[in-house]
Length: 163
Image (tube, rainbow, N blue to C red; front, top):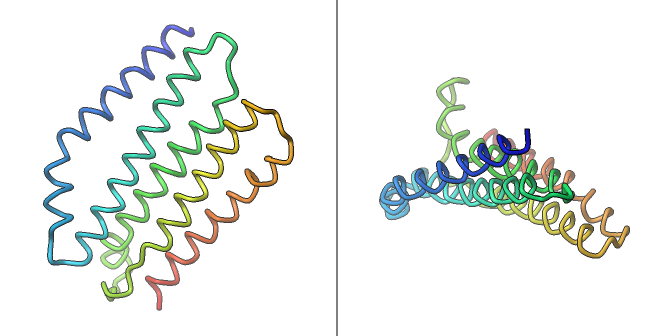
């Protein structure tokens, strides 16, 4: 029922806010680290939680809307591409070397994949909200380009780890 969707979205929002409060000291400590990898992880995790928060707020707005505003795509992309995708970028350099048995050169870690991924989610969310507000169909072209940016972000990420 709609009430349980609203309650679930509100609870998820509360959890995100509580986690952000609990982790804020960790974010600050990692951001000040002398190790490049720890600073890299900190920036990515903060960006991921930002997208997660946007996604949960959009999900709550979606469930509260009596007209079922077309926010589904925007909240799904914020959560799945923004939050989950950015968490993959954050933890990939930590987990992949141990799993695949190679070392990474921390100097090669780049914010370019994060920038491309965040830009793709921003294009998607703003594009979807613009479609909702204005109904201008050419915006769909911009929304469609967001998927190519996601692909580019992950290809660049893999390339930086592999080279």
